[in-house]
Length: 199
Image 1 (spheres, helix red, strand yellow):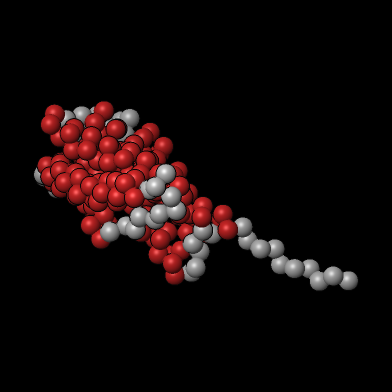
Image 2 (tube, rainbow, N blue to C red):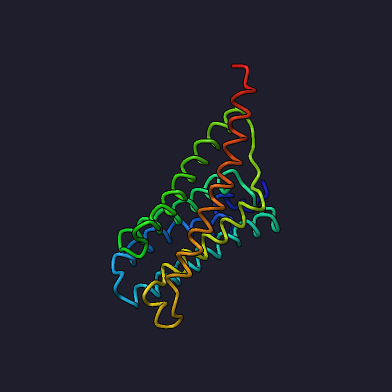
């Protein structure tokens, strides 16, 4: 009689990947909550969802490295989840006039950089060239998430911490500056490989 082998757990359902799935699910929840920008309850709930999603951004990588749960699926979905969360928040915060006037340019810079990096990564992947994440890029992500946290709290946050929105806008501009810096690094790497490519 053949021994019954234990069923292997699908790599798609590792803890690291489940954390990433959670961040993907948070995107439509955030969008739905920000459709009621005047409701303080919706704002605080949106902030809670955003903070939880931001924490998973750190945790999924930590879990994948610590427990050897790295997978191709996780490497693909992790940056997608990050970009969807940031892009959706920026669009909703602009639509509800939390981000207005010249400050919209900071959001445009961040969104354009995300498109640029996605295109460059796709091109460089065809050349079998990896682009490591720099320390400045990690700082950019941290500042970006902090700025969005303050802005998601918005008027609800002002009742607890006066100056919440100006703090968020200041951090948004700092994130935009770091975005330009890191975007140039990616662009420079891409141009170098385009020039060196003999095809």
